[in-house]
Image 1 (cartoon, rainbow over the protein chains, first blue to last red):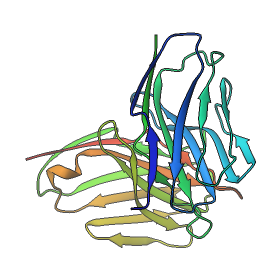
Image 2: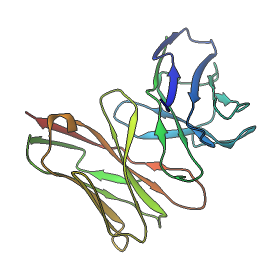
Image 3: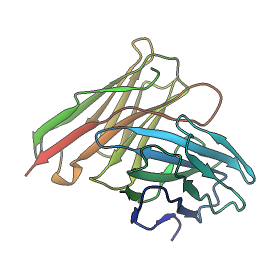
Image 4: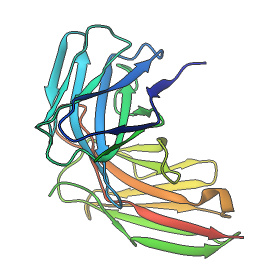
Amino acid sequence: DGGITQSPKYLFRKEGQNVTLSCEQNLNHDAMYWYRQDPGQGLRLIYYSQIVNDFQKGDIAEGYSVSREKKESFPLTVTSAQKNPTAFYLCASSSGQTRYEQYFGPGTRLTVT
Amino acid sequence: SQQGEEDPQALSIQEGENATMNCSYKTSINNLQWYRQNSGRGLVHLILIRSNEREKHSGRLRVTLDTSKKSSSLLITASRAADTASYFCVINAGNNRKLIWGLGTSLAVNP
Protein backbone atom coordinates (compact mmCIF):
# COMPACT_ATOMS: atom_id res chain seq x y z
CA ASP A 1 0.00 0.00 0.00
CA GLY A 2 1.27 3.45 -0.88
CA GLY A 3 1.10 6.18 1.69
CA ILE A 4 2.78 8.38 4.23
CA THR A 5 3.79 7.16 7.65
CA GLN A 6 4.63 9.26 10.65
CA SER A 7 6.05 7.95 13.85
CA PRO A 8 5.46 7.94 16.67
CA LYS A 9 1.77 8.83 17.02
CA TYR A 10 2.31 10.35 20.45
CA LEU A 11 5.58 11.79 21.74
CA PHE A 12 6.42 13.23 25.13
CA ARG A 13 9.56 15.21 25.88
CA LYS A 14 10.99 17.35 28.60
CA GLU A 15 11.60 21.01 27.94
CA GLY A 16 15.10 21.67 26.65
CA GLN A 17 15.40 18.44 24.69
CA ASN A 18 15.55 18.22 20.91
CA VAL A 19 13.18 15.71 19.34
CA THR A 20 12.99 14.31 15.80
CA LEU A 21 9.71 13.39 14.13
CA SER A 22 9.81 10.83 11.36
CA CYS A 23 8.03 11.09 8.01
CA GLU A 24 8.35 8.48 5.26
CA GLN A 25 6.46 8.19 1.97
CA ASN A 26 6.44 5.47 -0.68
CA LEU A 27 4.35 7.42 -3.19
CA ASN A 28 7.41 8.49 -5.20
CA HIS A 29 6.43 12.11 -4.59
CA ASP A 30 8.96 14.85 -5.20
CA ALA A 31 7.68 17.40 -2.69
CA MET A 32 7.25 16.99 1.06
CA TYR A 33 5.92 19.34 3.71
CA TRP A 34 5.75 19.77 7.47
CA TYR A 35 2.84 21.55 9.09
CA ARG A 36 1.93 22.41 12.62
CA GLN A 37 -1.67 22.47 13.85
CA ASP A 38 -2.80 24.00 17.12
CA PRO A 39 -6.26 23.43 18.65
CA GLY A 40 -9.04 24.99 16.59
CA GLN A 41 -6.57 26.27 14.02
CA GLY A 42 -5.70 25.66 10.42
CA LEU A 43 -2.34 24.33 9.34
CA ARG A 44 0.79 26.45 9.36
CA LEU A 45 3.72 25.53 7.14
CA ILE A 46 7.02 24.89 8.89
CA TYR A 47 9.31 23.68 6.08
CA TYR A 48 8.91 22.21 2.64
CA SER A 49 11.14 20.43 0.18
CA GLN A 50 10.57 20.17 -3.55
CA ILE A 51 13.53 17.92 -4.35
CA VAL A 52 16.16 15.89 -2.54
CA ASN A 53 18.87 17.90 -0.78
CA ASP A 54 16.84 21.10 -1.01
CA PHE A 55 14.30 22.64 1.37
CA GLN A 56 12.78 26.03 2.13
CA LYS A 57 11.48 27.70 5.25
CA GLY A 58 7.76 28.02 5.60
CA ASP A 59 5.88 30.57 7.68
CA ILE A 60 7.00 29.37 11.12
CA ALA A 61 10.46 27.77 10.67
CA GLU A 62 12.10 29.26 13.77
CA GLY A 63 13.09 26.55 16.26
CA TYR A 64 12.77 23.75 13.70
CA SER A 65 15.19 22.01 11.33
CA VAL A 66 14.79 19.47 8.54
CA SER A 67 16.83 17.35 6.16
CA ARG A 68 16.01 15.72 2.83
CA GLU A 69 18.76 13.21 2.11
CA LYS A 70 16.39 10.72 0.50
CA LYS A 71 13.30 11.21 -1.63
CA GLU A 72 11.26 9.03 0.73
CA SER A 73 12.18 10.70 3.99
CA PHE A 74 11.76 14.19 5.46
CA PRO A 75 12.46 14.19 9.21
CA LEU A 76 11.65 17.24 11.34
CA THR A 77 13.67 18.17 14.41
CA VAL A 78 11.98 20.30 17.02
CA THR A 79 14.80 22.05 18.83
CA SER A 80 14.92 23.48 22.32
CA ALA A 81 14.79 26.92 20.68
CA GLN A 82 11.15 26.40 19.72
CA LYS A 83 9.26 28.42 22.32
CA ASN A 84 5.97 26.54 22.22
CA PRO A 85 6.55 23.09 20.72
CA THR A 86 3.47 21.29 22.02
CA ALA A 87 1.27 20.74 18.96
CA PHE A 88 0.01 18.29 16.38
CA TYR A 89 2.55 17.86 13.55
CA LEU A 90 1.47 16.76 10.10
CA CYS A 91 3.66 15.64 7.22
CA ALA A 92 2.42 15.73 3.62
CA SER A 93 3.70 15.05 0.13
CA SER A 94 2.70 15.92 -3.40
CA SER A 95 3.76 14.71 -6.82
CA GLY A 96 4.99 16.63 -9.79
CA GLN A 97 1.90 15.67 -11.77
CA THR A 98 -0.85 16.39 -9.26
CA ARG A 99 1.27 19.13 -7.85
CA TYR A 100 -1.23 20.92 -5.66
CA GLU A 101 -3.02 17.98 -4.09
CA GLN A 102 -1.28 16.98 -0.88
CA TYR A 103 -1.38 13.58 0.79
CA PHE A 104 -1.10 13.56 4.56
CA GLY A 105 0.27 11.24 7.16
CA PRO A 106 -1.69 10.47 10.35
CA GLY A 107 0.24 13.06 12.38
CA THR A 108 2.36 13.09 15.53
CA ARG A 109 1.07 14.70 18.68
CA LEU A 110 4.03 16.18 20.57
CA THR A 111 3.74 17.20 24.20
CA VAL A 112 6.61 19.02 25.85
CA THR A 113 6.50 19.57 29.61
CA SER B 1 -4.11 37.73 5.41
CA GLN B 2 -4.29 35.64 2.26
CA GLN B 3 -5.89 32.68 3.92
CA GLY B 4 -9.36 31.50 3.13
CA GLU B 5 -11.96 32.21 5.76
CA GLU B 6 -14.62 29.58 6.21
CA ASP B 7 -18.16 30.33 7.22
CA PRO B 8 -19.75 29.15 9.40
CA GLN B 9 -17.15 28.17 11.99
CA ALA B 10 -19.44 25.39 13.19
CA LEU B 11 -22.46 23.67 11.70
CA SER B 12 -24.77 21.05 13.20
CA ILE B 13 -27.32 19.21 11.05
CA GLN B 14 -29.39 16.04 11.02
CA GLU B 15 -28.44 13.01 8.99
CA GLY B 16 -29.90 13.24 5.49
CA GLU B 17 -29.81 17.03 5.36
CA ASN B 18 -27.48 19.00 3.11
CA ALA B 19 -24.51 20.90 4.51
CA THR B 20 -23.14 24.04 2.92
CA MET B 21 -19.84 25.63 3.87
CA ASN B 22 -18.49 28.83 2.41
CA CYS B 23 -15.00 30.18 1.93
CA SER B 24 -13.87 33.70 1.11
CA TYR B 25 -10.37 34.81 0.23
CA LYS B 26 -8.59 38.00 -0.67
CA THR B 27 -6.00 37.25 -3.34
CA SER B 28 -6.02 35.97 -6.91
CA ILE B 29 -5.67 32.21 -6.87
CA ASN B 30 -4.42 29.39 -9.08
CA ASN B 31 -6.76 26.87 -7.50
CA LEU B 32 -8.77 26.16 -4.40
CA GLN B 33 -9.04 22.88 -2.56
CA TRP B 34 -11.21 21.43 0.19
CA TYR B 35 -9.82 18.97 2.74
CA ARG B 36 -11.51 17.00 5.51
CA GLN B 37 -10.03 16.20 8.90
CA ASN B 38 -11.62 13.72 11.25
CA SER B 39 -11.06 14.42 14.92
CA GLY B 40 -7.35 14.52 15.78
CA ARG B 41 -6.25 12.77 12.62
CA GLY B 42 -4.62 13.42 9.28
CA LEU B 43 -6.26 15.26 6.45
CA VAL B 44 -7.89 13.91 3.33
CA HIS B 45 -8.05 15.79 0.05
CA LEU B 46 -11.65 16.09 -1.18
CA ILE B 47 -11.66 18.17 -4.33
CA LEU B 48 -9.64 20.76 -6.26
CA ILE B 49 -11.17 23.45 -8.43
CA ARG B 50 -9.03 25.55 -10.75
CA SER B 51 -9.44 29.28 -11.15
CA ASN B 52 -10.97 28.87 -14.62
CA GLU B 53 -13.60 26.40 -13.37
CA ARG B 54 -16.93 27.35 -11.84
CA GLU B 55 -18.28 24.07 -10.50
CA LYS B 56 -17.06 20.56 -9.77
CA HIS B 57 -18.71 17.43 -8.47
CA SER B 58 -17.35 14.39 -6.70
CA GLY B 59 -19.89 11.90 -5.40
CA ARG B 60 -22.03 13.74 -2.84
CA LEU B 61 -19.77 16.79 -2.95
CA ARG B 62 -20.37 19.87 -5.05
CA VAL B 63 -17.90 22.77 -5.09
CA THR B 64 -18.48 26.13 -6.70
CA LEU B 65 -16.00 28.91 -7.29
CA ASP B 66 -16.76 32.56 -8.02
CA THR B 67 -13.47 34.33 -8.68
CA SER B 68 -15.20 37.70 -9.13
CA LYS B 69 -16.49 37.47 -5.55
CA LYS B 70 -13.39 35.57 -4.35
CA SER B 71 -15.55 32.91 -2.79
CA SER B 72 -16.19 29.19 -2.90
CA SER B 73 -18.76 26.88 -1.41
CA LEU B 74 -18.75 23.20 -0.54
CA LEU B 75 -22.07 21.38 -0.54
CA ILE B 76 -22.40 17.92 0.96
CA THR B 77 -25.70 16.35 0.00
CA ALA B 78 -27.59 13.69 1.96
CA SER B 79 -25.17 13.95 4.88
CA ARG B 80 -24.18 10.96 7.00
CA ALA B 81 -22.86 10.69 10.54
CA ALA B 82 -19.51 9.72 9.01
CA ASP B 83 -19.31 13.19 7.43
CA THR B 84 -18.74 14.63 10.91
CA ALA B 85 -15.35 16.33 10.62
CA SER B 86 -13.62 19.66 10.12
CA TYR B 87 -13.52 20.96 6.57
CA PHE B 88 -10.76 23.26 5.38
CA CYS B 89 -10.65 25.63 2.45
CA VAL B 90 -7.13 25.83 1.04
CA ILE B 91 -5.88 28.21 -1.61
CA ASN B 92 -2.85 28.17 -3.86
CA ALA B 93 -1.67 31.50 -5.16
CA GLY B 94 1.54 32.67 -6.77
CA ASN B 95 4.04 30.44 -8.56
CA ASN B 96 4.88 27.80 -5.98
CA ARG B 97 3.22 24.79 -4.40
CA LYS B 98 2.56 26.39 -1.05
CA LEU B 99 -0.98 26.07 0.23
CA ILE B 100 -2.64 28.61 2.48
CA TRP B 101 -5.05 27.08 4.96
CA GLY B 102 -8.21 28.50 6.46
CA LEU B 103 -9.27 27.84 10.05
CA GLY B 104 -11.92 25.29 9.08
CA THR B 105 -15.62 24.63 9.55
CA SER B 106 -16.54 22.04 12.15
CA LEU B 107 -19.46 19.93 10.89
CA ALA B 108 -21.50 17.70 13.18
CA VAL B 109 -24.01 15.35 11.55
CA ASN B 110 -26.41 13.98 14.12
CA PRO B 111 -27.92 10.52 13.59
